[in-house]
Image 1 (cartoon, rainbow, N blue to C red):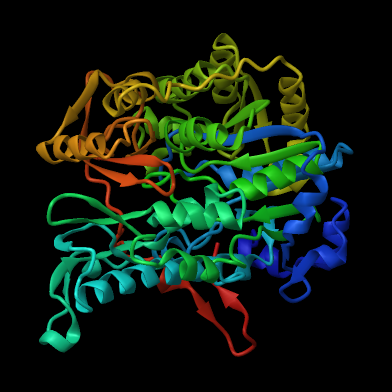
Image 2: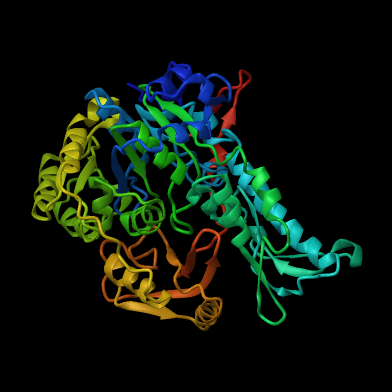
Length: 557
């Protein structure tokens, strides 16, 4: 029997009108801004109506360190939400908006999988409601204003060698990482070096996701440091007069998007920063709204607990006043065996020794969540090749670490395949919360970075390049030492070396540079070889994406 692809499952689904989905959360048609029949933005008036209501239970979904074998974090988020609904709970969830970068470069899409998907899947994975395009345009408007300011007399005394605001686009394009602009004489601007980042790495995206409302967004944009004068003073987006017009471009993008799962569970999809180069969480607005409208609200943070979860807990929860009730850590037996040294081609064969070695990675992530004072439930995405002995070993090891385990079959069975997981998560939510942040904001930037590297990654310490030292000195002079820290690190290892799988020991993290994101409210520490503009792989997902004469899309998954 042929197993249908994700997109075939999604295309065969019967979508319900989004007004009917909204009504499950008490949102009226008048409070929606419709994008066709199946997508809508939620009006700010809903928040004003419910902001004083009690919050539901906040559940974070994270994962082990990702591998090519796959883990299924978004699928679990969707499936768990569907399972909670099947158990009679009032539930919604929030995930990030996929960008075209990964859709055409690496993974093909990011809307869940199997029978635990959000739909309309093709729309979500492509242009959706235009949010990412709005972020791109707002960012590049500021870039254009910078260059125009220098062209028109440079009243702010900007040093063209010290402009830190680059341009962005929503595709992987390595050829644009480092470029020279303004060539061709005086009429074409001031020549200088610059480059492109991917849109999801933009500070505008981080600001969109961390803003409480439109005015907060505008104030944050005003604080963005775009460059420095010849005598080293910071120049902001507000200084060059770009904040108001950039905010206008984001007036609709800031409103959360509402769609549905295959089983009709309300889903907020809003904002999309990468967790290896930004804070990796959907918008604070979507999260806060969903908590008011639901008894249980599920959300996810990008990549493993060392990246997205740490940033969700230390950055988003701190800035948004959020207190999670429980955390789900997603893993697969296949991925754990890879962490234990098994080759991808050999994962179908039982190997308890490799699994036991790989369990060290899961163990570290469980410990990380425990360090925040939160109960953890391990969700094992079950594959047909998993043996009973392998599953028993995982359960035994997790029990010894104080984490409950659930075998999840949400890919194959939708909500029905996640009922056990949902029951265990609900039980975890009833345990008293001991939630604490990892570090105090009063610590110096170096102390914060070293706290994260040692406690979360398991590093022996941090090494700073000369450039990083210069960056930190400048941040100190600007009086920004109190900002939070957002570590930009490879997602493929607990260390800053993607080749080190499992639970590496005896390593130090190298911080190459430190970027000031004053609008977002954090410092970005660039570690190892992390790039803010990815390149396409040898065989990009774009090669398999196509459309037929009837307009049906294939290749997104």
